[in-house]
Length: 338
Length: 282
Image (cartoon, rainbow over all chains, first blue to last red; front, top):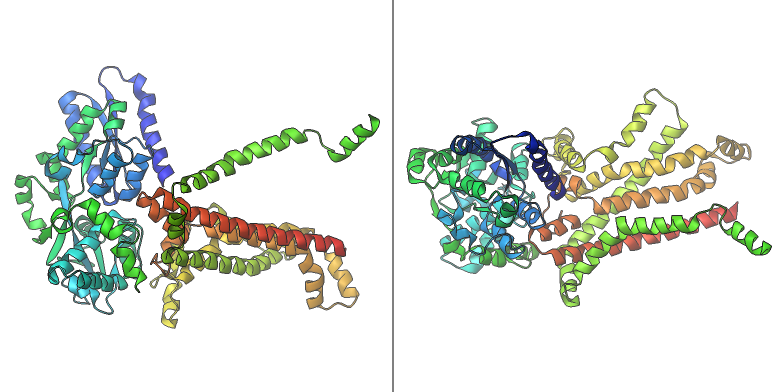
């Protein structure tokens, strides 16, 4: 996959280069956006809108290529040299690695754009089969014996980390910060998971196509999309009493943008995500907009749910990663005690 | 002078030994040794106790058991049914033989992810085969059995393609001679045919086994990937990479590499011994 993305990126960069001598006046720019799995539809729409906007504004033609894959895998590809102009990943921890491992961006990257550099947000919801046969209402119902839960592996999937932390946050609140009981709750939940796919799309396939599981823990946008694409009425979205505010961050990859001379247009690309047009596109693709005017317009689309942030419930990504997902963390221990 | 010349000529009948050996070593270094030694060098970032803690963690050990166990079972299944397939393809003529012959190679050519997804779709509880197995209490997809199915699938061509040419070379006259000397069918098979194809069968088995150990793409879809149950070692390596733990990922890879090398070395040794015995007997 890594190599494939590299080849695609190389082709993406090479094609316009060969076409360059033919253009006369207006510049012909290519941007590479390296993104995570479920943003395919979002960036397909957004890239077209941005190209149009940039052509009208400056007369330059810009083509944006987007590559998709698991968030961690994509970050690793950039660290290993995939020269992305912008990175739009599933969680801040992966973007942090671009600063930490490869010094591609400054350490304080997350302060450069509004809302922790997350132009849109999402959350984790429960997708159940038609008629909700197991009567699933909240996280509590997922630990009942006989309920089969589908989620990807938090070690390989960014989305799954949000799932895990959302369940953890719920249990933490329910048991009043009793850590042993919280652990037991999450352990029981994981015992009901028969398949741990490596990515979010893989889990959706297992649940939808293979017919396995009673409930799928999913990104809200992925759940809406599954409903829309796979036929309304086959699935129902259940909104839990508490969930986590997922903030997928975006950043310019300074070192590569500088190399390509695309800093200005890369910055404009991300800024455009925050404009009314950009926010509209995000909302249409079921991401929760951060701009108030668009958020109120689409208010009825998104169910109201109490959301906790990663900072207030877990003290930030670096800490959450260390406590829960690194080797010997809570996720590993749940399986070892079995 | 004359003597030395003839000695040299006897050692290397073909000229260019030095050049071709040099090229072989250069080529092997470039393609095999250098990338593999990079894995060993990366591992040295860990101290020995760290290395040991990583490679002997219970979850990692469970994955070795699954990977090597499932690969062994898959290779054994292939040794039996691959031999049968090769036998049918060599000894009988029937309509559609060419097509079946070509089908054998498909697992070579198919992207492994495609194989994995197809196998999962067929063996899942709502799949063509899975729907008949599940009422019997047999779950294939998302269990260790699924891992064996995938590893058997990808290993089949290795056994068939190594045994087939040897069977083709085996003259039917030797069997006729055995029969005319009073051997029954079982004796003909065990005393005449089997000793001749045994080394090739071992090679095919070793290749299928080695291929299965390293397989990732097809297994990942059909295994449930649940720690301690259906998690293969290559997935552990990928998982560690996803968490930016390069050194511990390569540590596990090095362990796999060493075990695989030892196993292949042992199988090669066995094959050499069998070959020598076979030539000594004739």
